[in-house]
Image (cartoon, rainbow, N blue to C red; front, side, top):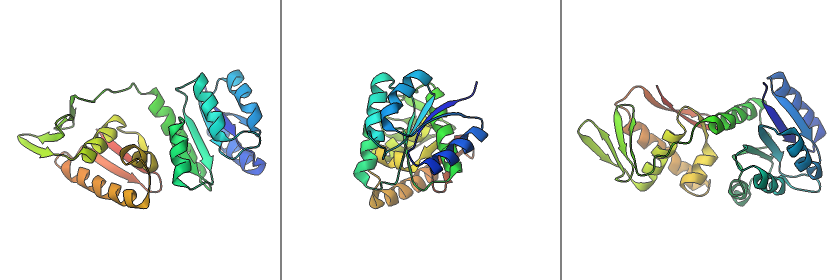
Length: 228
């Protein structure tokens, strides 16, 4: 059974290209161009994922997402927008968006983000808060903020702990850089973005004793924490 996408876009030329490309990759796409018609289509079609343009006639993508979340709090929602203000991005996540893709975007990026959102949805939730978990040859004591390798303990800062925990929960999936910044720092400002680079480098150095653990940078997208 193919994955059904509810795609909402009022730019007809762009919408046609995106729809046809997604369909060529095996997705079933239901496209709407008017915000007023989306909820009816959502209830009738029962899609697996929603891709919503933010700027739409009659109703914005944000308003539609809020209504969808009242019906289904689990379905992945991806926003497409030319907006770049941090408050817009944060608002999108706060109302239940799973990802935020800035226009213009490549189709490969969109497909990767759709696949990642669907993969995360299918995975069983992992409750790790307050537990000691094994990451490869390491033991991660979350409450104590300690990473142990053999008899050697590395004391982690709060943000190092939160970052490693988030990487672990999303192991082997693509993690969006903006999503990570908003989760750890609360916004994706330039200053915090540079901080993230530093913290990723630190976590890599902490895990260097196990060659089966790797944090891969996916340029222009984010990261993937690989655990073999």
